Length: 83
Image (cartoon, rainbow, N blue to C red; front, side, top):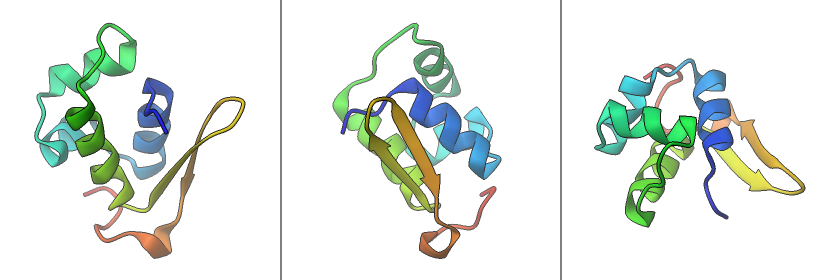
């Protein structure tokens, strides 16, 4: 699955995470997350993976069908919502 800006925006919204919190969790700058979400830049595979892992640890499931999808599974969260 290729992580897209829509995935990240949706996941952050479901979790109530700021760009800054996600960036810290993924070991990236807030500016990198911001620019990726706006579609202004692409990120390296390792950076995308770090974002994906940070969100999945909080109970997010990503999927692609005809369009990007995101689900929140609170029971799968290793890190509490909002953290």
